[in-house]
Length: 100
Image (cartoon, rainbow, N blue to C red; front, side):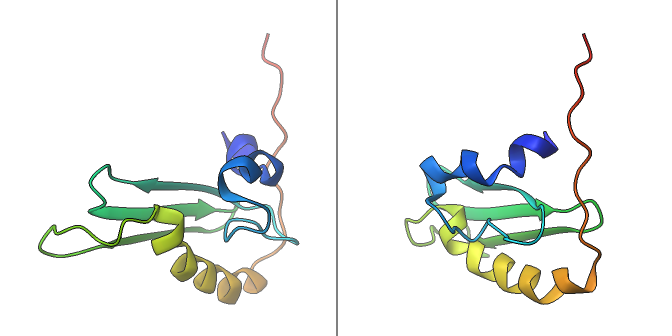
């Protein structure tokens, strides 16, 4: 899962190049989400040493603007990660193994 969620090339068809999920010098895994009725948008991302989640929504359960989670929560998450990541060591996830 770490390998899939941290693969910048695999994200390009959905999120375009240089999305808020892409970090040039860090391996960061991330998952975004949006409820079908646009009441919630979220992103959870992590490195081997850090996990950060951001949720965007309204207290009264009314819809937010009709944008995906990466658009509504991504900038908040990215700003936090840009500030905090340099305080952590640059680490990579262990590569996947073949467990046949």
